[in-house]
Length: 312
Image (cartoon, rainbow, N blue to C red; front, side, top):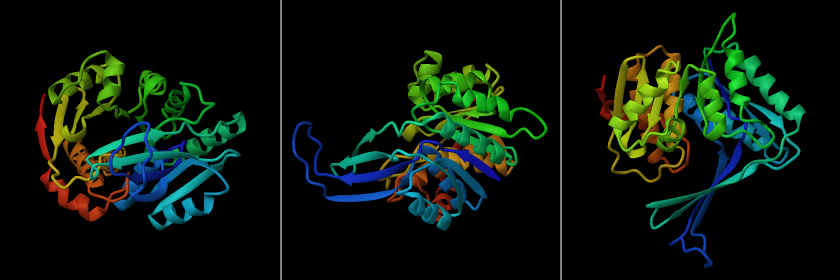
């Protein structure tokens, strides 16, 4: 069982326009909307691979039925904590045939202490009966930077500590990393912010991953976009990548990568195979019409094409 804390759920909209020009009027060529948020994408990926998965996140009254229906149909058990405010909307603007994507992300509705405590307590209750617990994405307004760190610490306590995976940014990630979760997955920019080192390719990604792993984190995965990802655990470092000429968009690929990694860990795979599955999931997202969602057939087709190289 995998439990995902994707507290800051959203309504994701993909909008296609001819050419993005600031200060001018644009006509929408096509618009699609789905339940979204980084944690939701992680959960959907795990479910697409056939794993049992639960998601804890905010919901408002207007969208509860839609989220429960969509997620339930895709195999995700949704535990929605209701908020008085409206869910945030996240826009992905695609122009020039999808070659460029501009993201506009709302912060989310403000949360009071009762709502924050309900999110924390429900996540902990479910995560303590899971092998893998994931904290993914931003926290809604009202949470402090140490929100994930506190949950990481709580999940490390006996009798049945879960392997806790964290994918966040800024102060939220920095504090969580100091709490030493089992795994963190920074992207290129986040890894640079954590270490002060430049990440300009797989070799630099490997160096930074080693640096972070040496701080007491079990596994560090640095995602590198089209260059794949690097994983470090102790002295073992591996790079995985796959070429996808038919890629349509990158939005949500890091989330899908983490979903595949969570599944690989839940299945007890070796690090190389965990990363292979994760990279296949990230690549599968780029050929899906929906952001942050993969089709199992695409993952199965891409997985044998992923190249892995041991770097240390």
